[in-house]
Image (cartoon, rainbow, N blue to C red):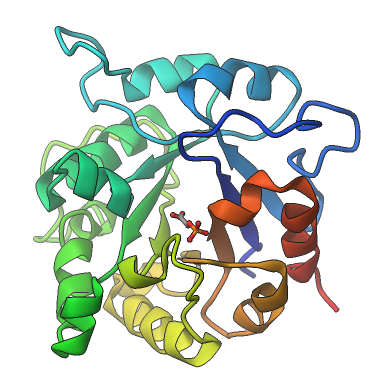
Length: 254
Ligand code: PGA
C-alpha cells in the first residue's frame, strides 16, 4: 500500500548532463515516485521539464530580511511538491536544531508541501548505544503535528489547509552519508521498524520511511526488500544518471 519513493538529492551540484532530456531517469515513473531535489538554481528548470521536485531547504517564514535564504513559500510558488527538512548536512553546516526542523515541517504542511523529514544518529551516538534515543528525540520535534485533531499532544493552532496530512521520513545514519559505508539492510530495517512503532497509531501503515546513506545500485535492492523500507534518499549516486536509473529499477516489483 506504500508506493516506493526514490529521491535524488543533488546537494550542491548542478544538474547532471542529460537530466533535462527525453528519457531522463529523473522524470516521473508510474510504479515508483521519482523525485528530484536540485539546488535552487536548477529547480525552475526541473519543474519546467516535468520533474516532481522538492527544495533542499526553505525558510519557514514566507518572506523577510533573511539574506541568502529562500522560503518554503517561494519553493511552493515555483512548483515544488516536496520539501526536505533537517538533512544532517544542514544540521551540521547551518546548526539547524530539532526545533528549527520542526518549524520547517510545520510550514511545509501548512503550505501543502510534503515534508521529507530527515533523522539519524552519528557514529558516536550509535557506538554509545544511543541511536534509538536520538532518533526518537528528533522525531518528537514534528510527530505531534500528525496527531488527530482532538489529541492532547497535537500542536495547537496548526492551520493545515490540506485535509490529508502526509509526511515522509528519511532515516539517514550520519555515519553512512557520503562515506560509501551503507547501513546493512538488517540494521536499517531494525531502525525503520522502530521508527514506525513510534509513529501515531493511525499513521503507522501509511507513512513512507526512506533510507539514505551511500545507497548504490549494488545495495539498493537489498534495502528495498526490507519490510519497512519504502524508498531511498540518494546523494552521490543520484548525480550519475545511469546509477540513479538502476536504483529506481531496484524499487520496481520483481
Ligand atoms: P549519499 O547521500 O547517498 O551520498 O550518502 C545521501 C544523502 O545525504 O541524502
